[in-house]
Image 1 (tube, one colour):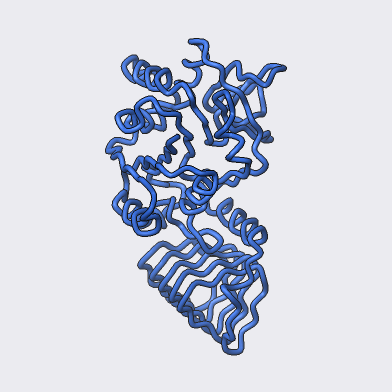
Image 2 (cartoon, rainbow, N blue to C red; image 1 turned 90 degrees about the vertical axis):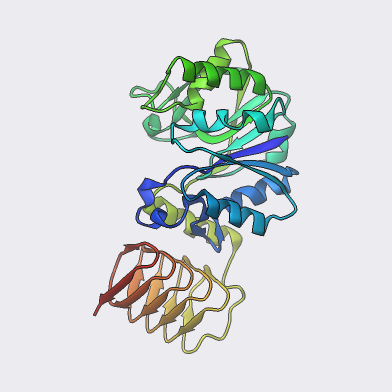
Length: 330
């Protein structure tokens, strides 16, 4: 089985961070979104990965090849962002007719991946949500077989959202449906959607079963990214890596602090992740993600997302700062 991870999106909802950093490489609970996904699949026994890259794709490739040198990896370029269906179709020559596990690059879920891989049928991960209108939606029958999928319906007939995790056995039919939809210009919300190809597969008689994931973490926006960071910090039970004797500093777990950081006269936590080689002085930081090689001096931060190489002085309450930024709030 091969894993397909589409990571070609520009991540516009996380601007300005994604001007210089792919969304999949944004730090999260001391790791990255992409490393959490890949580690889950490696633990389940998958050793061959196909990454669909585009915007800042060279950073994705460099990161993967450096962090996972023992995996078999392929990188497929998606120059025109035409949707998830278009992205998956580009992997056809690499995948051929092998079974695939597709995980969207901004999707972190908790489930029994080994059970998913060993299932006798194709599976789509679902989760009940209060408002499914912003997601792909699955309708199922009493036997847990999916009878219909639709992308972002205005009047949903189900509250089961597709979480971005798909185990597909009938890859030949999937690729044929993707190709047919693109040739016929079948779009949903101006893009070629994987959801529409899945609906096509159902129409040809392919059985797709639903499986409910334990947890589903949204990493697409600042507020939900910070919530996910806090949840995962608690789950990983991170205090620091490990707690170091930072000068005159109080650490309130859960906190993840990268290597080479210099922190003094500060209060850090709870729910804070700090990248490598960052300097924090005379500051209070809570419920925030701070990138690497940044410098914080006399600031009060809460619910903030700070990129790498940022330089902040003064006082603040909530910021959304990208890489290579310098701010003086004094």
